[in-house]
Length: 502
RNA sequence: GGGCGCGUAGCUCAAUUGGCAGAGCAAGUGACUCUUAAUCACUAGGUUGAAGGUUCGAUUCCUUCCGCGCUCACCA
Image (cartoon, rainbow, N blue to C red; front, side):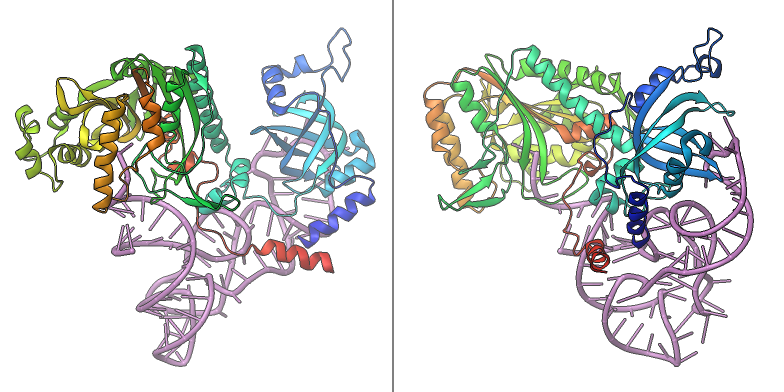
């Protein structure tokens, strides 16, 4: 770093700014590659009509990623938007001052180059430089040039380096943006309105999870970071926003794993006058289109499996247990409907909880193909409507792919009296020590008491969906800054202070 | 929280049974006006994650701690 700080003075002595200002480029590097990438040397060279040697003048800017110097001339690669273009700098071509600047370049510096396009002897599209401008100095050295940056911890902590060094990482996050854009566009086309509801909530609800707690000083109250936006969004359907959605963060104070980050992004949407059957059909359409928008096809590769979002499988939870059971003691349809059999195969208290438990242990990780599992036990679904013919079950389904849950949806319970009873059931569970049981949300019950239209609601985990559509096996690879333990002192700053004092 | 594994130069990695801590890239100096993992010569770069222990001697063996990864548990 000492050398590089000294180099700043050399750059300034030549009359350049080490930290430049505005640079009006004529093309981005990807634009040049797209526009001229297919042009031959002859097409770029001065034409017979006398187009002149500067037929294709360009001004570009980018980060220096490689330099090859050969005495009085040399090459460098500039990177912008994840793509690289070579420049050729010849002492005769740029003059002594710019050539001296070229000799001072470090890998990682950001420069502007004005010149014209040509092809080298080996055929690479290159900018023949005529004028250089210095735009920003790097004080630290870049990751190694052909292994890139591989240390997983550094990649997560210093994501900017990961993005510079590993172009495929950039692609993952661009795909994530496409997924979100596709969902927004499809929802907007169907008349959904995007809203924002509180992330700091006096009562948390809408899911079973432990919350983060924070404090508001002036009001002197504790607030919870939301575990789900659900109850607020349904208040809005009461208010006549019949199609609403929200894409934003939820926070759950739980363990970290390759499938869990404490803050994660959910899409939740609510549509009045439909039910879970309507949402199953809608989800299949929505996700198939997202897959196309993000990857160009409905069939994606994940961990060696071909997943086709154009072909959703559907099973009831009970069917799934029968169908996917492996090994000894495979149950029949009558077994999974039998409370005694269920309780014998789980240590849960009720038949419904036992069924869900058995499903999670025997089925969930086998749901590789995109699958919808429907008809859930009422015990684990305090906010969904019961099936009229089967009151032990609710009109709920979850979407699975690659062995992960990526969505959860149900016909919303809009009977205020029944909702009040369900909350009281949850309160009883809470008193028995279940930290994750729902709190009574009196305001929500009051909202329902004004009448909510029959409504279907759904949540889709954006991070997990992105994992599947980008082939990422850890959720940390699809979150730019995943939660890590704090790093401790960063000695670069101390070094900078010492060098500054000298 | 449990189990397994990893931590060596800025980066990517070596180091035999416990016997002088190394290479490539990056960096510095010099040569070179079409190179592309540029090449060639030379130079510098280390608290081997931390602390303790065993030993004549520890990157190597032991203990504890720190950080990270995988995995199990937890997590509709």
